[in-house]
Image (cartoon, rainbow, N blue to C red; front, side):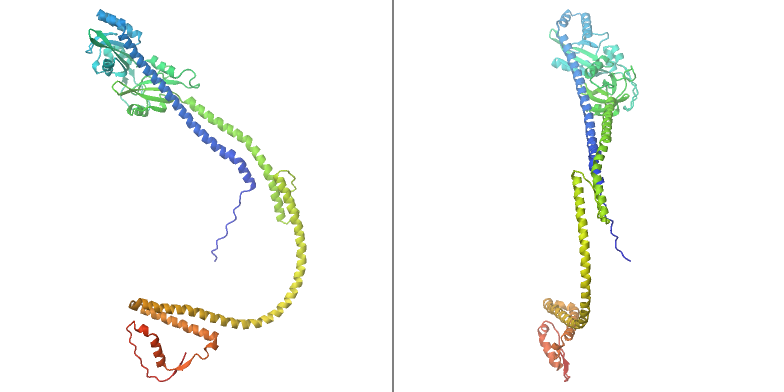
Length: 562
């Protein structure tokens, strides 16, 4: 049973047709789609990054507007505190007139409250009925105004503090909470606190007394404020058709002023921001720049925390625009590119295949011609007459086939002549072989005998040399090992015996191969004399070991030995 592995079939290499098709279509159907896909992916990422950059810029504009509003409010209240009219009403010492003046000034400055405190934070005059304060000394804005002249901040007023200033403010600040998907769970149903632009400016009350003029703008339900931000950030034609910009002011996570619609004409006041945005902006104090779900749709959004005068994060400022038109534009662009690519492929690929066909069809005809020649049809020709490189190759092939056909005819003639000569020479050789066979038979026997003798003598001599080396090195090993070799005495004895056997075998071979050299080698000797001679030869070895030799030489006969 044979274990030979059958040879593997030869691996077929791709045909020229396949290679040309791959060369023609690989750039169009593989390389170009990869490049196009990579470009679209990079463009997609850059497009998203541009949206984030835009919304970040929108947030910057909204922040600057809010900062400017704080500055303008402070400047207006500071200017009022330093005005001649304010000084004139102070000189009149009529608190009723001062209250009326502050009320007119509040309306003119578009403030929601305006009142005057003396240096002990005692209430002097206010711009609304029931005006009062709740521990004004606790407001950092008032303390900073006393120290620097003017201070502004966004502060959080409780319902009681708003009611102490003006009950109407407390009522206006109240917002019912709307259950919102993805918001942090809460049992609250009403947001009664108010977010206020808090302004304070130092005032000279005369006679060395210092006071503080305090004003504020309630931001809850302040739609004019948020619409102004939205109009400033998202001007007409600043967004593509179908998109819309939105702006929102949050008290913590509750929308207290927004232009985001809950329904067609209902603003989403009282809805809350998602938990993930609240965590990043309010809890961690980081700006959010990403897409976010706002009330009922996805927006490209920007949120930043609002910090009050005490350094606490009390709310958020938001701007964003609807993502859907941009997403649709991206998909439309990708679809348009894909359609353009497919259209270009549908037009170009047939052209490429036609060009490829013009190349491999002549090659196929040449291949068919070569196959016919291999099958024995030496008259087969491609018959192509083109002037391009392939046509010239085809003509050269036909010329080569003409030469092959002529050479084949010549070879056939030479072969016939050679066959005739071979037959004549064969007859002569057959007769000579008969004579050689007779002579060879006689020589074979002589050569065999001579060869056996030569081989035997050569083998015997070749064996003698390594045997002599082994015997000599064995003796040297005994000398070197010394007494320690007693442990291997049996092994050494066996080696000596085997060497002796080999010597006897070699001697017999030599006697067979060259009997003339050993004709007189044997003689009749006395055993005692031979033993004495042998003991002398190994005397140096006996001196190294403790061996006692006991001899019994009683025989007197001679023994024939070599």
